[in-house]
Length: 375
Image (cartoon, rainbow, N blue to C red; front, side, top):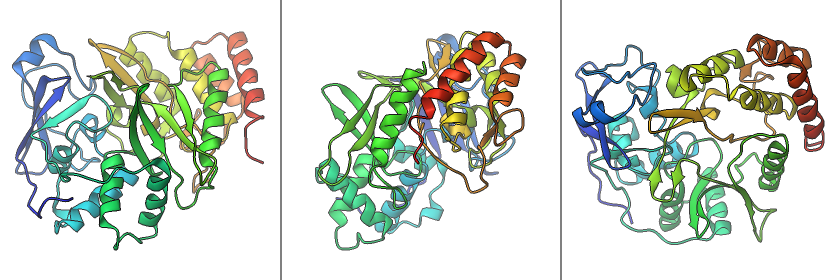
């Protein structure tokens, strides 16, 4: 059940990664949230956001504020879409105006449950306990929350919040653990078909067949629909948390602004990894998004992982059939929001991929995608 209403307004937060003190966040009088690395992290750590937060002494303050005064790497930890909806409703249920809860307070609520490896202390726990629900029950109550029909079932809201209150993306989600590991399970939104889980599962298997690095995926069974798509969390390995940074966080640009081009993604990957080894992998993902009609390929859907200071492209995620309000891809190919074979091959040439290999990959992916696109 929820705690009693209170004001949540920390002035500072400690940032940790796998128990190591990375640094401190502090609210400034002017509004932005400043950050400073700890002495220990300066000695043995790495830059958690190489473009904005080099591994240097001193205090870093955001010069622009697309993320409510946070640097993008910390904003990556916050819930988005569905998770933000749940958090705001939970705050309101406890008598707290969500508009008064700033970014530091929201990070304190996330604590160690956000995506990626960073965690925040002291942690603010909004729930003391909740009812255990199976996946079908969670799905039904997620739909009720969309329909504003939870007023008579506060305990069920608590259970849904406990399962997915720190998740991102528009569709309802829950974190689920079993003997095989930690999973992110997705449920249908109000506008989805009941078989959206099967569709995303088919897309994931197709992506794997196209040589795209994917996390382990499953289709959890259901008595009320075709099943729930789940992917293994690649930001967790046992009890270890792995640092993760999205293109949105790295560039300090909101993923809600469709201003990214795949050319920039290749440049970012070169910048982080120091080489071109992953260019072919990124090229395969671009081709898949183009030919599988995944228009929602925004900057929050591309990430890199860092272990011991070594960056690598994260496995692909959120690959499914999708459209946008403006009718094109959120990430363009050489400026074209509705690219085709000619565009992807031109970009392959620009980033130094051999044309014969690029053409072979493009044709392979295009043929595979024709089998899964909904009629």
